[in-house]
Image (cartoon, rainbow, N blue to C red; front, side, top):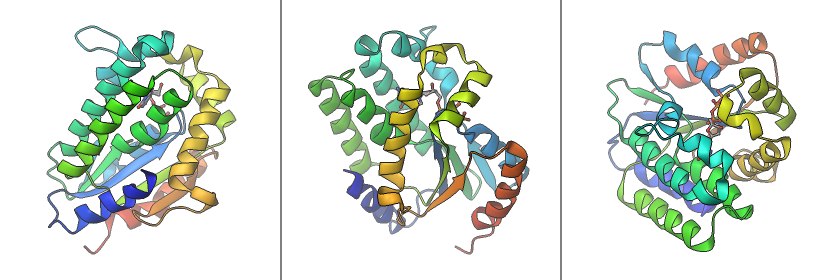
Length: 230
Ligand code: DGT
């Protein structure tokens, strides 16, 4: 399945671009995706699409993120099903600007979170298969390709510190071991064998550094995203 990821993105590239140049910002919980994306607010040709956490915490007044963390065995399937819907919506949302920058994607939901919940026994076989069938159908029938991934790579310990500092109530039970598992799945997907995949190109950022140091990195990466000739 991981191998088919490149094919999904390649196939879509040849399909006369029914979508804008799409950059996806990935990284563990607390890796600094929001801060990274904030930097791009200054560019007129970039449209920012933040992760719909507000929807996840309030679907007709149900806090799906909260109940998923409280009782994953009971609610993981419901939550992932909704994440998948909101992510497809984000991939397909109209974007008037030539560059679309998204926080996370359908892919991290599938390759990192769904995988992790299954490996930990929070999703049963039938639930996992149904989510996967939906995922595969979406990939085969909708243009949800990605042109570039920015991977904010952090030590899980650093991610934990930042997450605690932010203090999102739903995440109070998130442990270091959970962040380690998610970190390993991001690595397996984006940097198998320690080397970033090339299709779509993955730009790896050492996001352990302070936010002021990260500013320099953001300035360095901006021209790669904003001044392309395609
Ligand atoms: P940042 O700016 O790097 O600190 O980003 P965060 O931590 O605000 O955003 P993110 O995507 O890492 O996670 C927001 C919350 O939603 C966090 O508790 C993890 C959870 N989450 C995101 N996507 C999924 C998913 O597909 N499945 C599950 N179970 N949780 C998810």
